[in-house]
Length: 255
Image (cartoon, rainbow, N blue to C red; front, side, top):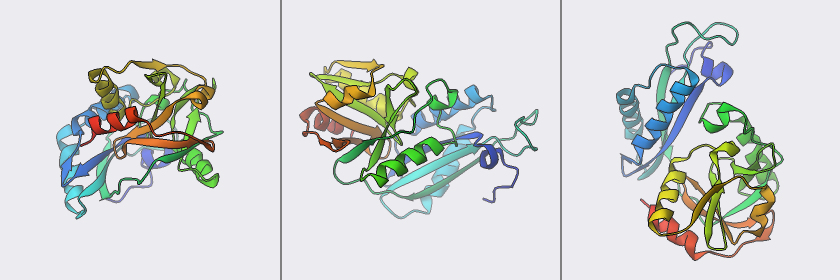
């Protein structure tokens, strides 16, 4: 697809995206991803998502990938518009999909706290919008410091998320994760982990906690639709021990 120069997604980041795992040609958890994009359209004042078209486009993109494990990205822009911030009276969103082979990361992640802050007061913090510059910069900073992923705090210095994942930690047998009010995206894998913990009888809390709290955690792990559950081996250079609970949760949500 050729994107015109007046596309609002290109010029202003006015749009949404979802990244869906595909295994052996099957889209995993597609309904949850489309539900989130549809909810995002409502928040952003865009026309309702055409779910049938979205699924067809993703299937067509996936058909061109031979790998058994792939990432399929669905992108929705607010369509074309004139100069400035205001959308046309009747926006015509542009929807397209791409797909590529996606390997599961090997081993646990080294987590580095980034100086880039998450804006918990912004509606965009809880939407999967096309504007991901903060995450791009946070991940780059982590990589420059020898890490695999960035831990992002919000403007209140509370733990929020990773650059491209939700964050969980274990403390005294309890499973903790930042509340959505911290400027957190409601991750589809995050929801699955919370549900799995409930089935396993693990005490769970969504909290507003200072970033320093994670330094005393027994274990930390990351989640998103592509990595599932990925343990963290160190936070800012301080080693963490393997956790049986993290392994149990990873097995519970494995596909």
